[in-house]
Image 1 (cartoon, helix red, strand yellow):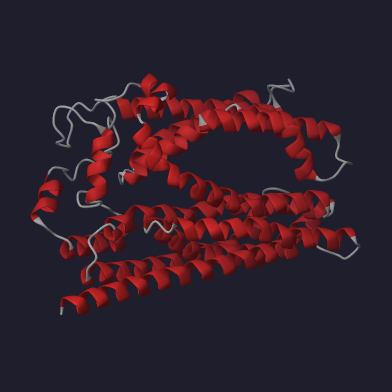
Image 2: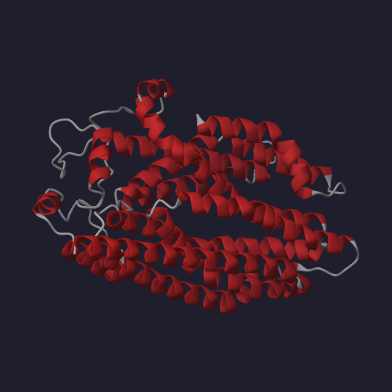
Length: 444
């Protein structure tokens, strides 16, 4: 329902949204029509995109990173084949940008079908002992009582040590039994997870929602915070594209497209830390309040911060050394290449802090601090575009504003966001330890 609604709104409002985003009436109508066709075709894939994102998050919640990898890798292959077959077509609705859009839509629905089959087809030998029937909602309810007690988490040797620490701190007979029922070889626990309760068609049946009102009510408190957070994240990128297309010159616009393409290739390297923290922290946070829990949260936060700083340092090195070389693969124009170099400091600062930001945000999400994130991203939704639009006004008034100033402004937003997120993590840790001190004082 969410995907269909969003796709319908995007496809219908695409002309209005594009005109506002471009902000320049002198754009070639051919270019505008090509962009419009691309957006409208991509809107057809929104239902599949939402289901894919949900399924991927569910797999990660079960500490299953291989299932999404298999499915999305196959989808990427479909996309590649579609690009090779369709992009060269001369038809305006089948070739060029439209062909690329169709290829992406086909890959999204291909991934949707593969996910449905992966989740609903049972394994030959189930390695998880849940009994003859498996009710996912009952499993979720049971897991919420003792989150993480029967899950193995691995993220390199560093997080394996954290898992050992958590097991030592919170070991019990119940958790030992649970761990024994999930063998080491079960590296894709999401496969067949819904096999005893759903079929591929029933998963997408909206009428089943009427039978799960209690489940809907449990998810409703998360709708506004999560939606606000997601919208707040993209507002800065949208405003940057608007400023570049409406106020900056042709060379800066071309340079921005190269810069944002390289940025989008590097950002997922550290964005994965956010999901890792969301998967690891809840298992500790859901435990009963105790000194051991507080110590585990502190050590986990410190270790994650070290990992985030390390990833950020690596990304900065890649940006400084790789962007000038990679840019030459996009263009040979010396002016455009020189403008891309002006954006390197801003990109490096943003991605350098991005590791710490992702770790802190994942930690906050793992501790259910949704209200704080909702309020912050609501503020950023207005503040970041406000500062970006100041650059547009300066450029239109005749003051020279280039891509370097735009990316520099965007990097300031990332630095502020990182400081706020880390400060919040420190504050929550302080509160946790204060609560433990009070409990121990009362017990004494």
